Length: 76
Image (cartoon, rainbow, N blue to C red; front, side):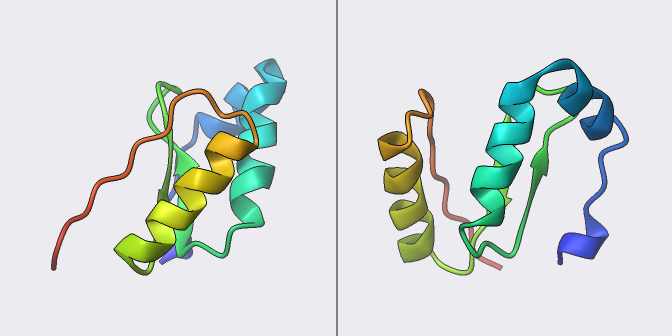
């Protein structure tokens, strides 16, 4: 799934803001299916394998000091 996501602005955002790099690195360690910056950078998201994984990762992000964390569950 990760190879299907692409945001041409992410590299530029990472060059301008170390927080974007920190979020990418944090998500890389979470074992999610995919993750990336949205559009021009209003949010950073991950696609998880399950609602349980999403909740666990949300808690880890909060514990790591990420100030705004939301989870949303959708079905196929």
